[in-house]
Structure formats: C-alpha cells, structure tokens
Length: 99
Length: 99
DNA sequence: TGTGCTTGTCAGCGTTCGCTGACATTTGTA
DNA sequence: TACAAATGTCAGCGAACGCTGACAAGCACA
View (cartoon, each protein chain N blue to C red):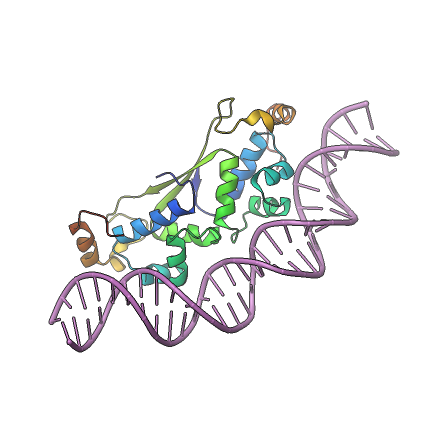
C-alpha cells in the first residue's frame, strides 16, 4: 500500500495489528512503546518519532519500500523551477562516491 | 529500496537530493523545514517527526510503499508466541468494517 | 591567493514529545 | 444482569524536539 500521509500509516498499522490478532497493549509491549502512543499513531499522529514507527512496522512484519520516481520533465511538481541543472551534470560527472 | 532503519532513510534522502541537484538549503526551504533538520535526518536521526519525513519524501518525489508480509508460520520472528488465534479467527469472521 | 557555495557544528529557546496512571466507554460473554 | 477485556480520554512530568542565528571547515574556480 502506498503511504502518502500519516493517516495512511496509521491505517496500515491498525489494520495489520488486527490482522495479526494483537491488541494495542501487546503491540505496545512488543515494540517497547506505550499504549497511548499506539492510539495516537493509529489515528495519524503527524509528529510521531520515525524511529518508533519503524520499530512498530518491524514488529508487524511490514516492509517499507522507497521508490525513487524517475527524474524527468513529467514529475508531479514541475521540477524546472527548482532543479539546478549545473549541479545535476556535476553529480553525473563523478563516477565514484564522494561521501 | 528497502528501509529498515533511520540510516537507510537518511541515505535515501541524501542520495535523492543530490540526484536532483539540490543543496540542503533549497530542499529545506521547499519542504518548509530548517537546514539543520535536513542535516540531522540525512544522518539518520531516529526521533525525527514522521510528518516532516513524509513531506521531504514528497518534495523529493519518493513514493513510500508498505508491504504487509503474508501471515504465516515462516515469519522473521516466530509469531506463535504472541499471536492470539482466537482474535484472528474472530477478525476473519466478520466480513465488513468495524472501525 | 581570494571569493563564493555547501556543509557541519554549536548554543539558546519555546513547544511538543512519549510515558505514566487513572478513569470512562464499548463490546462480548457467562 | 455482572464481569472482563479492549479501547479511548485526560492531566502531569521530564526530556527532546525543531527553529534561529552565527561561525568554521571543505571545496571549486577565477
């Protein structure tokens, strides 16, 4: 499922939890968080810690995938306004890691 | 790419940012966060707000997918210890939504 | 060499986090 | 009906958040 916002995330977590037959308390205990936190996250809390979110997803055996959409002129937001072509070219020039 | 922890997330963000030829400042401005925050997240900050993370991913045109692994006896962690079969059965019984 | 850009680091500040503990509500069951 | 379990709500607390602003290190280029 595609996660566009915090509500989607909360729905997936709640749905999966029920699918596995767990209640909030046992999920909280297993992930090392409070039940209160589970409640808020399932509701789509926007300021939840990403680390705890990842922990929950691991407990629920949910794999998170990041799909980088192809760079091109047909993006969802017009990139021509903010892409710096000089830096892009510069990045493509060097074949090895720079970090 | 598979996101297992906050470091993976930070790497994806940094990598994608460079791929698009953006510097930290412009990415921060575009996502409405501070450059300081970008620095910390790219480093794998575990307690970053999930809402801001999602905002960054949208700006970078990265799609987040949640893959629910099949429920079964061959999970990464043995579910027999914590799955309540009664609740699972109960969930499967009712065909419609209960939320 | 000097200039400009990018990145990283530091301290201070107001806000909000996540946890605890208790209680109310809802639901299923004896 | 009564009881238990699951869920939701509230207040209080210490800790960490994310932001601002400034400065230093690194790098590329003229």
